[in-house]
Length: 460
Image 1 (cartoon, helix red, strand yellow):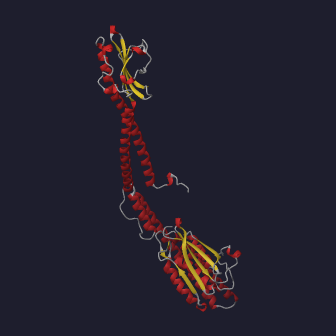
Image 2: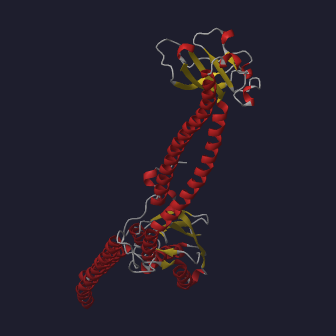
C-alpha cells in the first residue's frame, strides 16, 4: 500500500506530526540535560561524603604518631571494616612500599590505585576526584588528597566508595523523570489535539458549508468565520455569484437563439406546405432536419452550461420509475416488462431534464428492440470519485460485437430496420460526457444490448 507523503496529508495530521516531533525532541533533550545535571550533583554530593572521611584522616595526621597509633577502620563507619564492602581508605607517603601503607580492614591487604602519577611537580594540598577499579573489580569513586606536614613529610590520603551507589541514584532519577515526562508528553499530545481540533474548527465548518452548496442544500456559504478565513469565504461566495450569473446569461442566450430560429423555420415550413412538387417536399425535409439539428445543439449547449452548476441535485429513483411506467404503455403491443431496481437515496449531480433525456433515450432504445423484458440496475462505479453506474439491458436480438466497439456518432443509426432519427444514443452519450460520465454499449446477459451509463453522484 502506497504511503501518502506528509505534504499531501491533512493540515490536522501535519500539525499533529509536527507538534509530536518537536515535543518528543524537546522532552528528550531536556531529559538528557536533567539526567546529566543530576549525575553531576550526585557525584558532587558523593564526593563531599568521601572528602569528610579524607579530612578526618588528614586531621589525625597532624598529631605526631597518629598514623602509627590509629586503628584500622577508625573513621567511625563500620563499612570500612567489612571485607570488600566497597568503602575503603588508604594513607601512605608518596612512593611508599606496600607494607608501609596503612589501609582500612575492608581492603584486605590490597591497595588503591592512584588517580595521577606521583611526581615532585604535583602540588600537595590539591584534591583530585575520579573513578578507579577496586580489588573485587567493582568500579570505585575516589577522592584523593595530598598533604604536606612539613618536617613530618608528605602523605597521600585516598578514600573510595562504590560507584554503583551513584549509578543507582541516577537510575532511580531517570526512571522517575521518564515517568514524569511520559505523563507530560501524553498531556501535551492531548492538549495539542484539542488545540488543533479547536483551531481547525472554522475550516471544518467552511468545508461543510461548501459541501452543502455542492449538494444543493444551500446557495451561498453562510456563517461567521475568523478574520483569517472570512476573506476566503467571501471570495467563494463571489465565485458562486459569478458562476450563477454566467450560467444565467448562457441560458438567456440559448433561449434567445431558439426563439430567433423558430420563426424563420416556421415560415419556411409554412411556405413549403403551401406549395407542391419536389421543391416543396425538399424544403420541408430540410427544414425538419434543420429543426432537429438546432434542437439537438441547443439542448447540448444548455446541458453544457448547466453541467457545471453547483448545488444541482436530482433524485434518480422517481425519474426512472416514471419512465419505467411510461414505456410499457407506449409499446403495449409487446406486453413489455421493465424491471427497475434503483436505490431510493441515489442522487444525480445535475439537472432533472438531462437525466430524463439520458435515461429516456436509453430506455426507449431498449424498449424498441426488446422482445418482452428490460432490466434497470444501479451499482457504485468509483466510490473515490462518487460515480454510480446504471445498466439497462434488453432481451432483443442485440448487436454484433464489432459494431458495439464504436459508439454511434450524431445521427448515425446502428440498425436501419427501426424508425427514428438516430440521435437518442448520441444525445445520451454527449450528455454523459458533459457531466464527466460515460456511456458504453455491450452485449447483455439477456441476449440483447446492454447500455452502461456512468454518472456523478452526491460527492462528485
